[in-house]
Length: 610
Image (cartoon, rainbow, N blue to C red; front, side, top):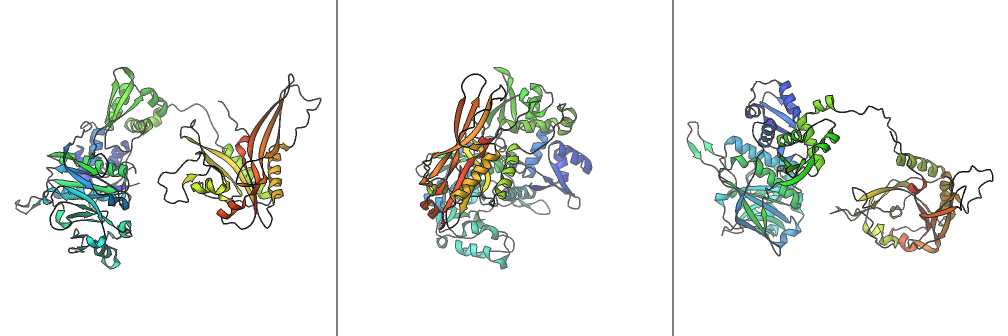
């Protein structure tokens, strides 16, 4: 989990706690909020806190203090507003080649004391490490609005045509030069630049993204995301000499821009930065209009709340303790929500989720915060633990998988473990099967090899037992796992008889025999009996050679003391010799025979009721 370092004395002062509060008391206080103290650094007067990886609003000192003050009842949950946009950024289509998105806002009336300046820089660094995924998803740029000239532009240019003076970092000072030379300097190990790991993010691109203003001198570069800002637009802290005379008023109005490859994450990062320093903006926050070619203008930041609903009954059942609707409303308000009962339905609670809580998506997220506000120690003491004992065990699917592995290995087959993701072509076109849209598609896959969840095992030419993923609207997730078995024989001859032998042996182990069921014996018990058999019928599966392929049909014959027997048939799988075109696409030179079974149809998962 992310670890942040904060000033212990300033933290306690902000919470109206004595500055000499013991370490044990501080740990108890943080534990009530669900945060763990990593360590105390008494020499520096600081302490390190472990925060949840998805709580980006707690990445800075001000966010932590605000959360604790609301939690302790020292102040109400904050609200955020932004003035209408007076400035805009025009986005050129060329940026789609490298970093297609930008969001922006303006902070007015800030006074950057040394403490505030360090907190401002520190939060950006912490967000870059976590929410921004080391700048791969989002990069933050901040500029002195009074030193630059609107309107603004987000462009992409060839590296050699971009010239500006980058921000001076450490001992490395680079004068005005081209962007390719700037990146070369940062990439040089001799310079030991902290920006070196970020150079590959755009270093291989034919164009570099740049944020520009309307300065008539050249391109007017403000930043080269995700690498470095311009020296001429840097934020300056307020400087005062030893006698209290102001040497430099510093920056007051800040132009914030976040560029990236993920628009949702960019908005989260922008909102986190804005809301953390919202109290310091004497002139308020101002929106910025983003203009994309051929699209309606987009205005950001979006600081509106959104609504979730819940009930006290849900909280009682989920957490296991008794609480009233009023209790739940109070707990939610302590966690920075704006909660109230619905006048039309007194049992229903309407919750306004603030823009700071990007981690909240479902009702269960509200439940987690209610549990935190209630107190985990109190839950442990008061929770209604069921008065019964249970014994853990292996899931039926896992147990069946292990049994099938042993049986197949005993027949001389070797197990192969493969990825659950395959390419779209491998799952359908390579097998000469039509795309029936049954596969769950991966959004924005990193590689073409992993585009969909496999719906059968043959694409990987397996000799294993595993699961496939199928779409199923009846499931909460819209998909379900299905246990299957696939076996393949590859040699100088296809070996159909070999895989057929394994198929017959495996089905026999499930009590399924080949051919017509034997007649019931005369002394059979006078109760319904079920006999399972299987038979092979011609198949139309294009993955196999015509005339050398068959569907495996499971036949269930039910006999009753009275009335005729009933017969139910179900397709269990397919067996055959793979088509030469399929083998060519998978670059296999030897003939192969294979079968695939839906193992889940061969056994019933036992259920017990307590």
